[in-house]
Structure formats: C-alpha cells, structure tokens
Amino acid sequence: MTSRERLQATLEHKQPDTLCIDFGAPAVTGMGVCTVDKLRRTILGDTSHRVQVTEPYQMLGDIDEPLRQALGVDVVGVSGPNNMFGFPNERWKPFEMPDGTPVEVPGAFNFTLDPARGLLIYPEGDTSVPPCAVMPHGGYFFDSLSRQQPIDEDKLDPADNCEEFAVLKARDLAHYRSAVDRIYEQTDYGIIMGLPGTAFGDIALVPAMWLKRPKGIRDVAEWYISTAARRDYVMSVFERQCEIALENIELLAGAVGDKVQVVFTTGTDFGTQRGLFISPQSYRDLFKPFHKAVNDKIHELTKWKTFIHSCGSVYDLMPDFIDAGFDVLNPVQCSAEGMGPARLKAEFGSDIVFWGGGVDTQRTLPFGTPEEVYCEVRERVDVLATGGGFVFNAIHNVQSNVPIDNTLAMVRALRDIRDGK
Image (cartoon, rainbow, N blue to C red):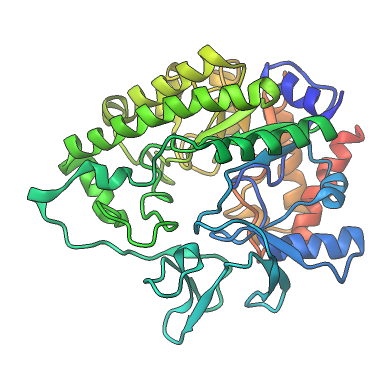
C-alpha cells in the first residue's frame, strides 16, 4: 500500500499492509523542536541543519521529508495560513532554545525578555501591544497570558467572543487548496486538514493569542466558570460560531474535495487524569449539539473522517462522541483512569479509530528506560492495531526534554514492527 492507501484502510477499520504512523501531521501529534533536532543528528547524521519551529505555541519542530522517510511517517497535515500567534510561518530567522539548541523561527516571532517571567511573545509579532504568552525560564514551550478586561455583566456581548470567527475569504480558500493539491499531486501521503472555527470552547483557543486586544471572556478560569454560570452566553457564542463553521465547511468542501481524508475538528479537552472534566449531561446539553451539526455537515458533503482531540479520562463520553459523529479519537490517553487500551479496543474499536496511545508521554517515554519504552510500544500496537482502526502516535506531543535514547527506542520498536520482527 501507499501511505495514503494505508491511512484510508485504517480509517475504514480494515487491516492495512503494515502499521500506519503519524508524527507531526496535526499540532497534537508532533515533537518538541529539540527532540526533532536530536533525531536528525542521530538518525540522519545531520549536524548543521536548523529545525524550523512550525508551531511556536508548543514549539514543535518540522518533521521534514528526510526525517519523515526515516521515521516511516504516513500522514502530513494542512493548517491555516497563520499560526497560533497570528503570523505566518515564513521569513525564517535563527533562534536558540534554552538548552542551546539552534533552531529557526518565523520572522514575526518577536519577543522580549522579562527577568521575572521569561520570554514574552506578542500577537502578530506586534511588541506595541501586551504580550500574549510566556515561555518560562528553562521552559520549552509557551503558556498563554491572561489579557482579560474587566467584566461588566450587564454589557457582556457574545459577539465579543466571536471576533475570531469569520467566513473564509478567497485567499484563505486558495491557501488550503494549494496546500492540499501540492501534497495530493506530488506525494502519496495521507492528508489531515485542520478546520477553522469548529473547536467549541477549546481552552487553548479561548485566550485568542493571535488577537491584539481580545474582547469578551478570555481568561481560562473565567471561561470554565462561564460554562456553568453564564451558560446562555456560552450557548450564544457557540450558536454563532457554528453558523460560520457550517458555511466554511461548505466552502472548504468545494475547494479541496475528497483529496483530504481526515479533518481535525476540535481540540476541546473533556477529561482529566482521574475522570471527566464535565458531566455527561453538560456535554450533551452544551457541546454535543454543535459537534453533531458539524459532523453531520461534513459527512453530508464529503468523505472526510472527523477527528476529535480530547485528553484525559473520557471513557464515559465515548458513546456520546460516537453518536455525535466523530470517526477518530486522539490522543487516547491510556494512562488516565478507565482508558486501558484493551478495554477501549474491545468496546469501541469497531466504531471509532484510535489515533495515538502508542506510548505514555507522562511517564514511560520521559522517565522510563529504553527497554521499557520499546516494550510498551510493542504492547500497545499489539492491542490497538489488531483488525485495523489504529494510527500510531504517542499520547500527545513528544516533549523537547525526552532522553534521545528513549525516543530512539520508540523508533526502533516501530521499525521492528514494520519489518515483522
């Protein structure tokens, strides 16, 4: 099979010729830039290349073609024209990570150093407005900063929380069309595309780090409070967001057609390490109607499979995810309560594709031995890949400070699986 055929078979719950692998297609399956640098140096012997930071919020490194080939990657991703800080990935310039790793960042990656907090970055690279995120001293990625304005309950306007949602313009559609066409025509990789504006209440997006002066409810804690205390307000935001999202789905369906196989629809987390972040009834009342509307529109117009990223213990929401029309679950956090891989595969494996779960990024990969990493990868693949319906990835992004010997053990396990060892 080609990589594209391998992904398609996997999405259709058919056993592919070999394991389908993803590293770095969407922004939740990538690797920290320092890990990518270490892999290139070790596997490719490339000591002079500066890895590009393609997702600067999480400081994820570019899995480029030589590394893609070395890792056996089957899937590549298409995202919007701007990154999480509101500027395009272009006009690359040198930057040094806290551990000394030399990398490249986009030209508008403008920052200042705060002695107390760390490295401050700015929306659209505009240092004349308040910073939107901070990379703490010794850290490897950014945390969003609260830019919440005083809240006047009598003047709250849901339109303020809809500022970032708009019908795609011709130039945006051209961006998606060009990116998809290039991958589809020049490679045989599977394709996943990020959908704009379909992630209802994704807490990574609520602070709107790409906006210079965001209005509405933008503080993380305040937003979570609002899902209970200001339910009508949040519902109004979601209703308007959904109207725009449905229109954009139609436009994108016309622009890229069925060259795309999977679409990243939402990254809203509903689980914690030990249980749900939200009650099942609250999910059904507040989120599920919009998830279903989006998924139904996608399935009506296209052959795209829909991808939900939701961390933590979401076992009790799995029937609702499936009923809402999701085709793919990521990251499959097997380390969370109730998320054992054998249980998930037995109960839901025929209804939803598992994309991730291949190795624990909380404990085993960063803190285990190489042998423990190798064995866990083999065990997870044995359980989750049987009968199809599994795309290998770690549980969320591989961090920049993971020991290189452990990352190499994961790669070695995947190669041995592909070689039938």
